[in-house]
Amino acid sequence: MQQWDVIVIGAGAAGLFCAIEAAKRGRKTLVLDNGKRIGRKILMSGGGRCNFTNIYASPANYLSENRHFCKSALSRYTQWDFIALVQQYGIPYHEKALGQLFCDNSAKDIVDMLQQECDKAGVQIALQQEITEVRFADDQYQVVTPQLTRQCQSLVVACGGLSLPNLGATAFGFQLAEQFGLNVLPVRAGLVPLTWQPSDKAVFEEISGVSLPVTAEANDVVFPEDMLFTHRGLSGPAVLQISNYWQPGDALIINLAPEQNISEFLTEQQQQHPAQELKTALAKILPKRLVEKLLELQVFPNQPLKALNAKNIERLDQALSQYIFKPNGTEGYRTAEVTLGGVDTNGLSSKTMEAKNQLGLYFIGEVVDVTGWLGGYNFQWAWASGWVAGQYC
Ligand SMILES: Cc1cc2nc3c(=O)[nH]c(=O)nc-3n(C[C@H](O)[C@H](O)[C@H](O)COP(=O)(O)OP(=O)(O)OC[C@H]3O[C@@H](n4cnc5c(N)ncnc54)[C@H](O)[C@@H]3O)c2cc1C
Image (cartoon, rainbow, N blue to C red; front, top):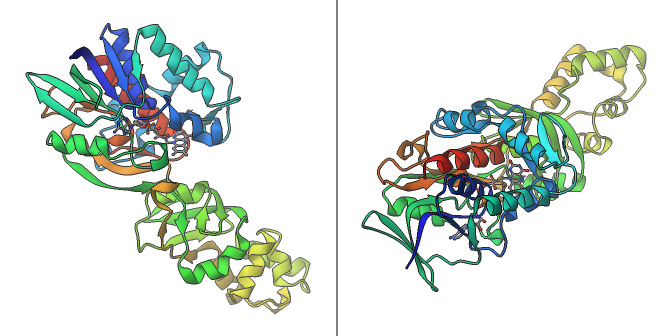
């Protein structure tokens, strides 16, 4: 039987980062993954440019049953630590928006950096490994594949969540947690487009491709970003962000013109161009195809601006600044960027990521019930949770 100090299951962001740190401490470390290459999600993240962190990352950008759990790891390995590593490798990057840092060239730069760090520290990696069983005997973990059984003192579970099943996502991490007596909170797709009700689909699919800045609100949480109409429903950063907070049956409240005071704008237009049609005025602040659709839906009757009274303007303002959509659901794990829920943090030490009830067993990254907003926050959690576990495993 092969003997290791540490075996990490999952060669994603969290697993690789943990393995590097463990190996730097002199631990004989092996990473196992079911895929053909390391860092597959990193490679396809951020449209191929990997939004690897966010300069504003803080615990407030994360969802979890225990909102305090992520604080320790995020404060001990910060975005500035990761940025320093990226700079050390001379990887060119830029801030795209809202503190989001992307590679100038390719996400491959980040994966190459991780591979080099693994090589330097002496991390071994075995790919295309189908783990059939994990056993615990004599204070050792036995990780079984059809080819061989490997034994280790510390087992780190970094299997990620359920999003993108065609990229190797499995529920294995959750199953292992349950096997060792940890609680797993219900999981659901996050950072995911929302889908139309059949009646809305018939109406809005015609304007798929239309994008506009909005604020999207659900359950008293509001995100100001762009929204995109698609054939299947609503997407774009504002909708992906709010999808983390939206629950089936909830309404989505959209301000279609958040940068405008609509009443003031229309009153002004009315004074300056009384004969102008309402749809012409609205097309100055909203995409024309959306205005035509709203007309067709009789959200407002088209008429010369001079025909509008103060009440009409107020009603129109309300209709546009609090437009209600009732999504049917989400596109699910097929397109979701993350999985909400997962291994209950109550069973883990926030300092080490070790299971409280099971010595030597660690859970890191997305498999844990900590989920970030869109914008580099999820990788920062993967780096931070991987780094802290790597100091102890
Ligand atoms: C399309 C897309 C784009 C994204 N873009 C960004 C972005 O730009 N910025 C950002 O911060 N976040 C982004 N994310 C989210 C981010 O990729 C994840 O939060 C992050 O990769 C989680 O890291 P992890 O190491 O926990 O899991 P993963 O990266 O998912 O790695 C888990 C690994 O475990 C392996 N595995 C699973 N089951 C088994 C098993 N049974 N046996 C062996 N191996 C197994 C998987 O194949 C995988 O390699 C994106 C996600 C997606 C899907």
